Structure formats: structure tokens, C-alpha cells
Length: 289
Image (cartoon, rainbow, N blue to C red):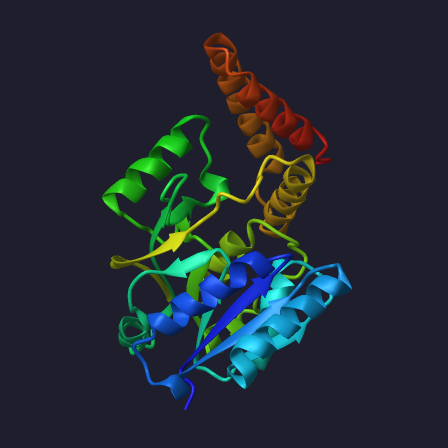
């Protein structure tokens, strides 16, 4: 009987998927029939999708479920996997995640508490080691980044002020379906904060367990690419609008912070960081409110 369904949404991720799946198989501390892996391919290029299908079929046969999906965003790709999933517990996993220790038995122990709806473990990466982030409505220029870093270091998680990293996170499927799964209006970014809002509204627990960790590679991503920045700006607008929050105030504070950092980068002669700050400011200024 399948207990945990691991869903991996891919986008041009053929170079990442093997090590991701192998890390799951090598660190599986459940019986083989208690876990399933579902790969949902969101690649726009049909050849990329076919290559992924062929690779998985050749290397894993029927042990990995493959779904070719139209790219309607990261959240909706995961929703497709959730609809197919048979497990009571869902694991959402990016293809650049590598499990470094067994943690599935521990996960089932946590979810034996029926009040727990979502669970995250400690994230290790080559950038920031952030396992959770501040809810956008609590943003304070300069100070927010400091408190995110401080509370991650002290491993102090509050489900009403922080949301878990969506790179590798567990949900009770029943609750996840009850709240409407990922909102497909969020193409990418801030879908985790949105889900946290809705779990809080049904009075269920979101917990962080520092006793287990995983590796998040991240080095292949460029979050400051203009297209990615614009997608993020669109998502933050949708988030603030959805919950009737002060979008104008958030944008003004965020831009003020970026101008502050731009000044520091200029004084330090860091041209690349100045250019990134300018790109982020330009993206935020496109938001209509």
C-alpha cells in the first residue's frame, strides 16, 4: 500500500532527474511498495518531453510514473501529480533536490498526528541554507532579510509568520485537496505562501523539523533573469490582491530597500549586483496597483 507519493515537476531537467530519483531510492527507509515517484514534465519542447519519457522508461520501467503536461506553471504541474497520487502523504520535490539521509519513516511518524497538514526539513544549499521564509505581508526593508537569516540559523519557525521552502515539502493529501491544492493563478513563486495562508485558515499545523536535512543544488538557477523577475512580480501582485493586503506599501518598501542596497553595491564597486538591483526595481515598477 502506497503511503507517500513523491511528485517531481521537471522543466528541461533531464540532467538533474537521475540523481534526484536515485537519492530517493537510496534513502528510502520504507518498503518499496509504500512509496511512489511521479514525474510531471512541464517542458515546452516536445523533444525534451520525449527524451524524459525515454530516459525514465529505460532506467526505471514502471517504477516511475511519467506524465507529460502542458506548462501551466509549477503549481498546476504539481496539482496534476497530486491528482494521480495514491499516497495519503504527498512529497513535493524539485528535480535539484538530493536526499542525503532516510527521512520517510520520520515523516510518517509526524503525520500520525492528524492535526499536522504540512512538514518541512532543514535545507542545505550553496547559497543561503534557508528552510523557510517570511510571509510577504510582514516585509520590513533591510530587517526582513536579517530576521530570515537569524531565525533560520536559530531554527525558530512560526507558521503564521513564515512559510516552508517549496523545494521539498510534505502535505497531507486530504488537507491539500481540501484547500484547493496549488492556486494555478500563481505560475511560479509565492505559491508556498499562498498554501500556508489556506492551511492556517483550516486551523491545521505546519511544522519544521531540524533533525533531518536535504540538499538543494540551486546553482543552475538565475532568479534575476528579467523574465523570472517579471513572473515573481506578477505572483506577488496576485498574492497581495488575493488576501486584500497593502500591495502599494509592499512595493514602495521593497523598492526603497533595493535603492539602499544599490547604493552600497555602487560604493563597493559591485557592478553586477547594481545591475541586478536595477533589474528588480524595473520589474517592480511594472506592477499596476
